[in-house]
Image 1 (tube, rainbow, N blue to C red):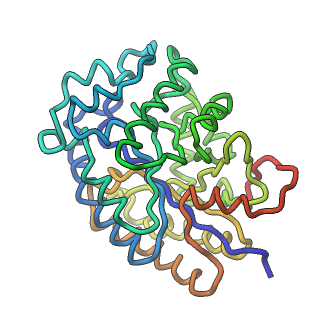
Image 2 (cartoon, rainbow, N blue to C red; image 1 turned 180 degrees about the vertical axis):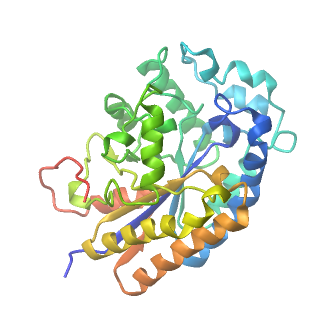
Length: 338
């Protein structure tokens, strides 16, 4: 018999246009972003139906009720990225006044809906969708950004304890800052080299091709982890296991393979008492909403079967971090992919 149940963690990077502003023209992706506003309540319905606890890593800008309030929480030190387009601050003059006028850049009503569903954690995706690995940013700027994220969340009665680094640009040398600001855990990347944190480089296309193939065929392993193998200091690393790719009509004939890739890993986690961490962005579901929800429900039904057998439970990131405190104190090993 295994010592404990497998754990399903789900985390969602909630950013609306703040996560896409510098990489995609708004006209090309507006349908997805606005569609996320329809998809989120439906995702929450499925989470409630299947008892799913999830972490929603929210960009701090989205908490603001209006532009005046947003400006009140701006950090003193802002990153001076070498790539001017990375900074959202010059862009602020272009956004509307509030959520009603500009649903692409504000989301207090959606945050309220998320908080109303049991088991949902509001985590941080930094204040400004901050890029920790880009030239021109500094540790001091990161501190101020994260402090602003905490302040605007606290103004809504939310205590941020989990972090997802934008573009998965996690940095070990910034983790002590996270601990000092009260964060318990963050989502790290899979240990395969194709998933390492990095800026864009000449190998980017090769990595993307590998990750795409790995979503349908098991190339990198199950990427599951045991509680006692996790890196706990300065804050707990809860590595990603798999990005849930949205429905793609061009790849529709491979949908079953994609789902099977995930359910096979859920089976493995359940049988070995390991953690499986699935993630995506709400805007990934903003187009082909019904197809994406159908895909998600197939995965959650599989989880439900494992739960009924007493083999698996659903925890958000904060709950998983709290669960590690119940583990025997022992020398921590580096994360190992199972």
